[in-house]
Image (cartoon, rainbow, N blue to C red):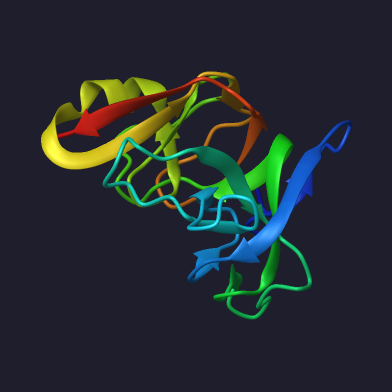
Length: 162
């Protein structure tokens, strides 16, 4: 479990960001997709569709609302595309990730393991997004802050959840 603030970049031996504006409110460390204008906007991972382009994770910046750890509508924001970032393990996670586990985005925009995403498959109308080129850097429990390493662009597999 990490004691870093959500969205902060860690182990910056390398990193890559995209910049744009928030479309709606997006929490630091949450998964994001391209917005209505894919060239300039990002929106929170919706979890109800597999027809989205996952862009990365909302990275902490001083241009955001740092008191509430979020970007509000139309605020400038950065999206981490490659590197190590602090995110939250989903409150809905039934298993605790360990270092080396593959990362999946839960429909709530937080993360859980790809193995759990696959085991929870069904026809419930929400989608987890398994990020093929990603992994947990450390172990954690549900609702903990954890470090993950991502490298976009990456193959994304959407799995409908039960």
